[in-house]
Length: 119
Image (cartoon, rainbow, N blue to C red; front, side, top):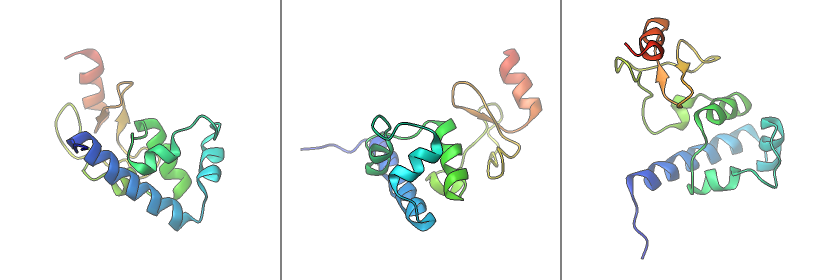
């Protein structure tokens, strides 16, 4: 008997949205991976779509550029700033949001400065 956890539930929702976006773009999984610049034999695209795991923040942004969509359309939640909690708009070339190396997002250069300086 399998148990659905919040993490697997979210991965499944992201996977379904990713599949729909890829199909709307008229691309195969292999074409997406080639455009992403990764080896189709080692990449997780099928696992992403099946909800077995989720793409990293960096891969998510790259996938959105390839598929002509935005992270906010693929994610089942609104991305929020880790410093102040405001929504982060990362729809166009990263928008105003900045990705930290941890995969977290901040909404502005002021929040970036606070988060990266530790204060």
